[in-house]
Image (cartoon, rainbow, N blue to C red; front, top):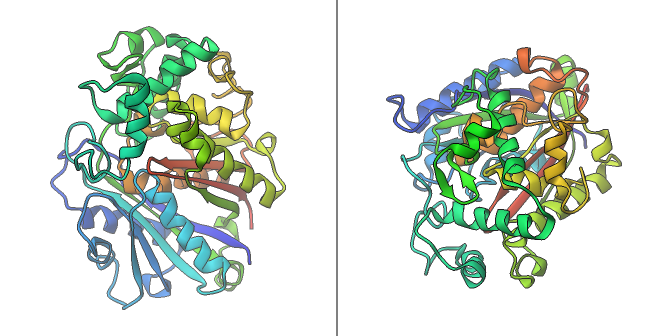
Length: 397
């Protein structure tokens, strides 16, 4: 059964403690906007998967209750940084499987200032679900005092530089591009533009990564209304419907750990596998895609994802971004929202916010950041531990 997104909404992503609000306030804003965008009521919603990482069990119910008290099932989803896309995937599966005709996917996060710890739970390494991943890093690169997520991705960047000749300027070009894109996004946490030289000169977090190449902690929420074809037709929603053509989640395989490489352990193999499945199921390839929202938690992960999605060959991603192929006027526009680096990264909301941006792009509603003629969009959301979700969207019902 075909599935469609007919409504999206989000809050502005903001630095933690910028506003005096609670997570349920965020969800009320984002969820109400998504329902209004779809032109439906919360009473039409049959199921509600809610993604978040930092709140207590059943926080999803507390948040969803701001939209209505209808007694519908609410599911709490936590999949590290891939949480938002995981909630959306549940929504799609409910509809595609014929269980429900209208499902609301929600994602939110109210975070603390400062860098993340060993995982979304902030626990110690001995009990962390990503201890195996960090063990691979430590065996090859040692363990330093910089934030652990920055270390593992920074070490992946070092390996890419050593193996393929990728340069610090190419890594910085990712940050420059995404900060430039976010200048036109009213939902973005940052809207400042920086040159490659300014990004290289910024404070180092874990070399070669500087602060302007790292996603910040953020507060925010996002929502998407997923419906069946019959629901869209019955309610006259064809003019706002964007089809979920294919979607897949992959988790870590033997390849993730066997090489002892941080490039593999931060998720490139599972991203590659999720993309392969989506292309196979849809009959479309990366050559058919116009606009991409991918998980640039650090600049190096954007480069690794270019390769995983098939946008270039192995080791060629530095040259790809440097060539201008992934910005306006190039082959694809990647992260027109500003990406995680500049739009912000409230973990539970990120994956749904990526899809919200693509829906606006495919409807032609992205204003100054509109990708001309965009018809097919791809979202990529990844979390260590691990999960990679790839979603392929197409304009029109």
